[in-house]
Every structure is written in C-alpha cells, then in structure tokens.
Length: 400
Image (cartoon, rainbow, N blue to C red; front, side, top):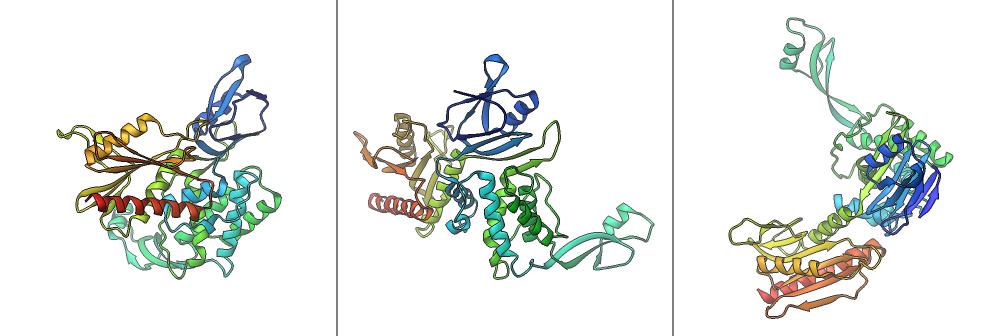
C-alpha cells in the first residue's frame, strides 16, 4: 500500500495496490459518486483508494485518478464502440496514444473531427418550433391557443431550416466541448479543440444527460462516421461539472465487466447472423417445468423457437482467476439441461488455461471453455469469436 498526497494517481484495473492519501470530504464524495474506485477510511484520518473492474479517469480539483484497462486503451475504446454499433471498426481508434486516457481521447477526437470538417461542416434541414412575428412554415394552432389565447402575435410556428445545426454536428460539438473541460491536455490539443469548436459555431450543445441525437450513416455523412462514433463514446461516458460544490469535476468511467459481456453478445450476434433464427443477449428461458425459475445466459441463439447454442461470458482477470471454476461449469450444465442442448460454451477474458471441452458423466452434454486474448488486434479477436460461433453451430447441426 502506497501513501501519497493529492496530485496525479495512476492505477491498473483490478491488480493495483491501494493508494493512501489525505482527502477532504468533497473529494471523497466526488470519488464515491463517480464510482470509478473504492474509497475507504485508513489510519491517521487518510483514505484508501483501490481500483476494481471500472476503468477511466476522474479529476476533482487538483486530484486526478486514472484507472487504466489491462486490454489497452485502443482495445477498450473499440470494445465500447462495437458493443454499441457493430459498424464501429478497429480503424476508428487506430493510433490511440498510450500516454493516458484524456490525451488519448483528445488526440483521437481532434484527428477524426478535423478529417470530418475538412470540406466544411455538413448542412441539412432541421425542424424548428418557434414564436415569430410573421407566419413561416405551419402554424401550431394548439400551441398558440395555449400560449397566448386571443393574442395574434407572435405566432407559434413550425418550419424546416437549412443550417449546420443538425444531429451530426451537435454530437461533434458536444464531444469537443466536453473534452475542453478535462485535465492533462497539451496546449496544442487545447488550441486544436478550441479551433474545431469555433468551426461549429451556431450548433447547439447537448445538455448533460440528454439522449444522443439520432444519425444514420449515408453517403453524405460518410466522412463524419469515425468522428461520430468516437464522439458518441465521449458524450455517453464523459461528464463534466464546472463547479457545483467545491471543485470542478470531470470523469470518464466504464465498467469493463459489462463492456466485455456486451461486446461478446454483439460479436456473437453478428457472427451468427447468417445462420438463420435470432440471437438473444441475454437469453431468457425457464429452468423448471413450473416456469418459476428464470435463467439468463449471456447469449442464446434460437431457430424456429428452439435454442440451438448457448454462451456465457466471464470477465475474470484477477491474478489466478483465469481458470474455469466449478460454479461456472455447474451454471452452464444447468443451462444446457434446461435448454435441452448437448453443448454450451464459457468464454473467459484473458483465460490462463488452454481451450478445454468436458464431457459430463452419465449425460450427452459437453461444456467448452474458451479463453479470449483481449490484448490481440480487434480483427483477430472478432475472427476468434466467429470461429467459436461456427463450431457451436456445427455441433448443433450434428446433435439436431
């Protein structure tokens, strides 16, 4: 355990030793609210900070805490993006710096946003509701009667306006402005972000906590796509509080266990998409004949109303935790029994044992354990998932 004073603290997901330092009540409350690290009392009125399965970074005044992912920043961002949208490609986070989360996000956002705006910001038609001294577009009679009964002007109207204030630009500008609030950015990055923000002048910024604007890939916004995908990650996971309470706060926090499960679910769904049927993530089924005990395997593929393949993802990366455990195997056996399947698959993140298949005594059931190397290039990881999906479907065909 290391004793330190407020400043810059870098921990590693799960495996780092705790750090002990002096904190005031506001800092303790902010760290606990962000839920990035655990904060517990230590001797001498100090506080112990320890990393778990959350990764990210938080700044509370002059205190900065970063928890780095064991899979690397680029892969973490890829898993996040792909779990939300399979159109997210490895090149969307190519060349991400490894000098810290904030610089990595800022550098990537600058690169892709600059490329998106190289030919100028996109323009399009947006629907506007307004009160005007003259009629433009369509009168909103109900709104007008409710807002100013008997008063002719201004008129409540709705019209289409051709401008740069479209969903794509709102997403970009919101991400740029969020990044301008984070710590440890180089002066050059601050200047680049400020210049990009100026190029999007007139575009509305999304308030904290509002839903992401909907955009659909098209020929017109193709050059925006990498910047938009990265912007979605930043807007979804990066929060900024300029000064409520004693300190300014900026945070980017993700739960790697949930990210891994979501990534595996989407990757398997994509890999199984050519096999017919549909994939549920998670799958919902009943264990008992009385329909009172529900089971929820992470991934369940169903054809013609019948389960044909089941998978469960386990994010166990603590030292010595990469081996399959009895409870995990028992759980998969219960799934196979309830689903009437002859095989099921357990996927471990960073598994330490070689791929194994067990035949359960006195049954026709086999349970497969497959470790996944999350540090390898995303393309190879997706190929490994596709290979497992193909293997599962071949075994399903044999046992049908």
